[in-house]
Image (tube, rainbow over all chains, first blue to last red; front, side, top):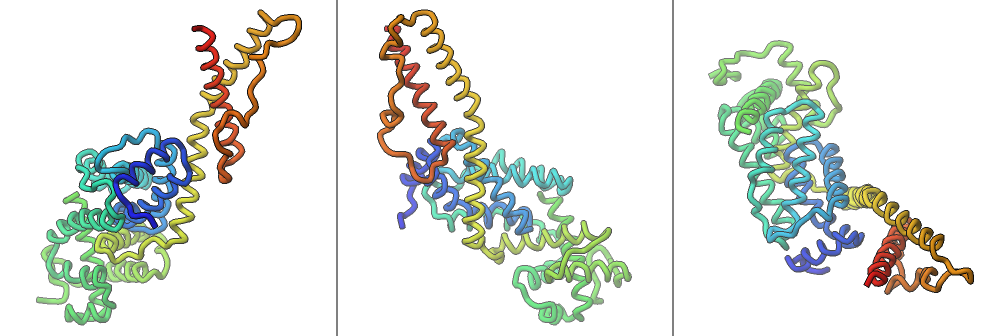
Amino acid sequence: MNTWTAERERELCKLAARGDRAALRTLMEHFADPLFAGVILPRVGNRADAEDILRETLARAVERFEDFVWQDSGLFPWLRRIAVNRVVDRSRRLAARRRMEESYQAEVAVLPPRIEAGAEAALIEQQERAACLSQLERALSAIHERYRRAIDLRIVQERSREQAASELGVTVATFDVILHRALTALRKAYGEVT
Amino acid sequence: MTDFDDPSGAGPPSDEERARADALRRALDGAGGEAGERAGEVDALVRLAESLRAASGKAEPLEPGARTSIVDAALEVGLRKRRRAWRPAIVAAAAAVLLAVGGAYLLGAPSGGLPEEAYSAPTDALFDAPFPEDQTAAERLDRIVSARTRGYFAALAEGER
């Protein structure tokens, strides 16, 4: 298997711009994971929707590859912009999450590329997830500590309801109500920080 | 402090709130979607929880089979749209070639038949290598028309010199 380098990425992009199917496939397969796990899924929170958006993103990239202009940051920022725009389109269709949608649009416009061409897919994914997580953490820091703890135990640490309830010193039925309140509060705070 | 102390001062839950909490629990456990007026709220909260899981690196990665089928479908759709975008230009160029050749023939064809230049070269001579096996018939046709159009304009430019 060839190592992924900036030179290789650039050469594949040249071939892809001429419609070379094998080069397009290699590029799309390389960037599919960081787009899915780092960019799309953390924003839409639904696997089926995220897979649809990934498919639309890659199809759009294949269709418009001739528009791509090579830069030192490589192909990923261009693909990322298409993906975030697709997320915006999707949330617009759902007529929901208006503030997040505006935030994503601002993000597309101002976010400087932090990725160098030739970067490993896993590194790109990690950086993208960290960016999303920091936004969610800002929202988490705005809610009550007890709510934060409930979300951390059940959602992030994936503890069972019984374990999480025990950690908080409440019954399981009470924990369900606390988690519902916690996520409702987080949703409100997320809308305010984004 | 009671079980339900929080900054908003919310007290013990009503029956309705308990029902909403239960609907959220079922949805988080993957026990099916919620119907009725609670569906929108539950869906939004589940999506938020999944976003947090994904950003924390807890979501399952894309399965290799799913990745392959997504890339296959994207290539199919993307390349088809790309060819469709080129088609009007190719058809216009091909029509221009036909008009020019036909016009030239009507205006100046010698009585003994067409001059040698009016006959096209065999398709094999247009390309250095055989067509890739995974290329579709439409893609091959596009390449042939493009090559012939280029050849025609090159010949035209040559003739003007």
